[in-house]
Structure formats: structure tokens, C-alpha cells
Image 1 (cartoon, rainbow, N blue to C red):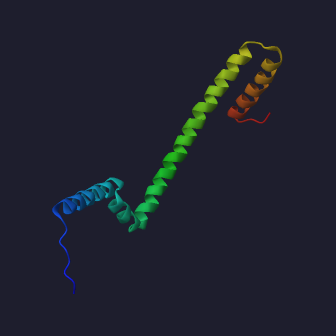
Image 2: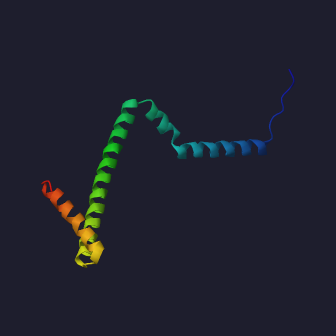
Image 3: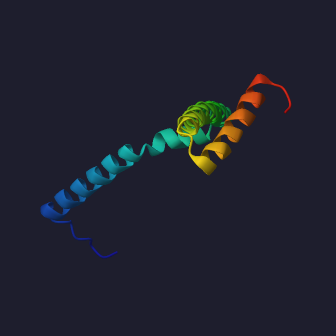
Length: 105
């Protein structure tokens, strides 16, 4: 067998620094946490379930605020008595109010 040369100290230092940098990058990406999560499918299911519920509640609240704002603006525009637009907006507001009261129009 041929004799192997020992690496020079500066090459070893560079390799050591590179390995430390790679280890730090792996720690930042949290690969160990990801692998642990993959080994526990129930945790994934519950995490996704909670995320879906939170997303659904957020969408519902956001849509409610958005619809209330639009309805408020339409009422303000209806109060301006614009000829064509005012009648159209008034009809929309009446339809929404009837729907909110729960009766058919």
C-alpha cells in the first residue's frame, strides 16, 4: 500500500471551518425537527387540522369585516341620491337587509 500524505494544518483548519459552517446551516434549517415530525404522523395530522381551523376562522372573520365595510360604503353612496347609481345601490342594500332578516323577498 502506498503511504498516504498527511493533510497540511491549514487544509485541516479550512475543512474544520467548513464543517462547522455546514452544521450551523443544518441547525438553522431545523432538519432534525423536520425528521422528528415525519416520524410522528399523528402530530402532522393535528398540526394541519389546527392550521386549517385557524385559516377557516380567519377567512370567515375577514370576509365579515369586508362585507360589512362594503355594505357601509354602499349605504353612504345610497344616501348621496345619485340618479342611476343610487337606485341600484338602494336595491342591493334592500336585498341584503331582507336576507339578513331571514325572509324571502
